[in-house]
Image (cartoon, rainbow, N blue to C red; front, side, top):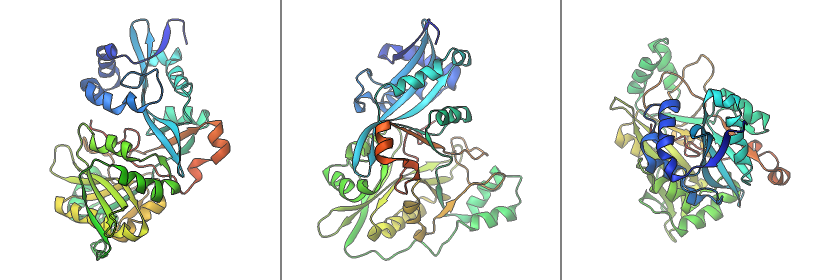
Length: 383
């Protein structure tokens, strides 16, 4: 790092310069450049135990009076089978090319590791960044698994014919048929379990369920009530739908699903995107069935769910969901819809853990308990 470069925590008076930096160098009309309110929500420093931050939690690289790089920090607690540790998701790590030569990007990255987090997590990255994470001994998951259920066969075929004109209509129909099963999804509700919409906010009854039923078996962002309220109830743009399964006798929460309906840019077509699916085995089928009924009501083309946990993903298979693995030069379901893009984008995940966590728990990405979804980091956000 040259003598003229400094790494500093973002200050409120920096927004105008940051907006210009993002607009000119990262992406024209980027959400972070046009909406300070969203920036402050995404990187809410009140959720961070690191006292250097005033809202939002960003680190900026400066050369004199000029911003040349940035990195965003989404604070969280990492749950490891019921124990929680301070952690952070890295987001929007960007530097000017000339500043990279002077070490701005690397020094932003190193500064994050100097803040004392027990884990640093990433979801979505460039090939260049992937090499850096590997060099710093991050555990890697090349592509977070994705489950798909086609709801409207004809319209999904039509969408893929438009996105993938290099394939024949016959090949696309055969591909879609693998993910289309009208016979699966409807189940008879159990008399002792009630599944119903949940308007929020999440409170103590969810914390009790999370602590007793889910956290001990998972390695994940700590999805307690405070986190779910921030992530879903208080989201500045998206309206998420939550449904819960409760025991009829004592009203205890046995399962939770969170999803949203996404309208494809410039079209009327819709996709249902599941963000959370946490369920005890006895109510998984009822929760799945409730999601499918809502998908039918909204007339969606298909449903998708990114989830690193195969056990959770498989609990949806009774409803006709199928694990989708994108292979090179093969048919695929689009991943981005704002706008609709005709390429497949991997959702690569990575995690660095402190020496303490490594000694205590070993490699986290080898555990079947790992639970990462599209709601982690900033993968589900407006354009």
